[in-house]
Amino acid sequence: QAVGNPTTYDNPLLPLTDLRERLTAAYAQFVAAGQFAEALALVDTTALEAPPGTRYAYSDLGAIVLTQAVEARTGMRFDSLVRHRLIQPLGLRHTGFLPDPGSAGGIAPTENDPWRGRTLRGEVHDENASRLDGVSGHAGLFASARDMLVIADWLIARWHGADGPTAERWSRE
Image 1 (cartoon, rainbow, N blue to C red):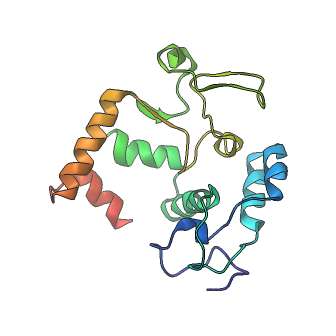
Image 2 (cartoon, one colour; image 1 turned 180 degrees about the horizontal axis):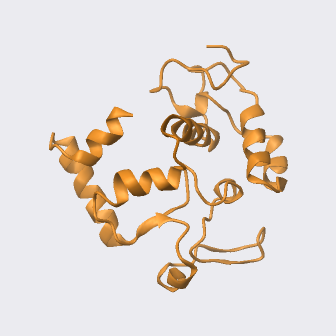
């Protein structure tokens, strides 16, 4: 595991923040990035602050890198993958990334965002996920309370050993 190549790792159970530490000085550049590809390039070139496994710090970067890896492995954009592998099989009716603007009235506002100059309702609150077109493994998924209950029931059932085609498909890829 070379610190110089943070996308190389052999233990996927290590905290993902070990792959990429905080954006620190690069954060301002990331927020200013105008395009999706430019934002990902900043994530992919941010140096580690410590060797993997030696320090833990919360960061979105590990989840962003993992999202890229999942998309590369499956050949699907993350929101499509989640829709096909989780949302549809579980019959979730009010869960997804990038909600229809017409349904935003049913979504609680999250903040009056000075960065975007408006109250956010039905769009991702997290600035990093916003720069990634609202879809990332760390933020951007909206769900109703009912759908969250379905997901929680499914997770509890899996924890107790219940079989399920959705979980099986997730664990194979």
